[in-house]
Image 1 (cartoon, rainbow, N blue to C red):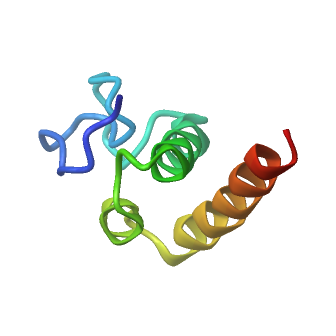
Image 2 (spheres, rainbow, N blue to C red; image 1 turned 180 degrees about the vertical axis):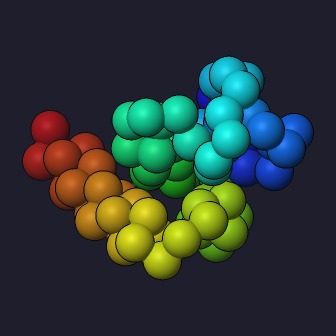
Length: 77
């Protein structure tokens, strides 16, 4: 599972540990959003902590949508 703490500077924030000059490797921002949404839905991460782990408002909005989809999917299954 991905840590919600800040990774080492120069590493991807998704938790993969790969080096990057930005916040994420290509595509890993979506990976991080999905990991956090599943963790919150499972009850292993607090929603506020997950939002704090995301560096931009667009990613926070994407997380909110993903969390809604994840929890809706869990309820209907």
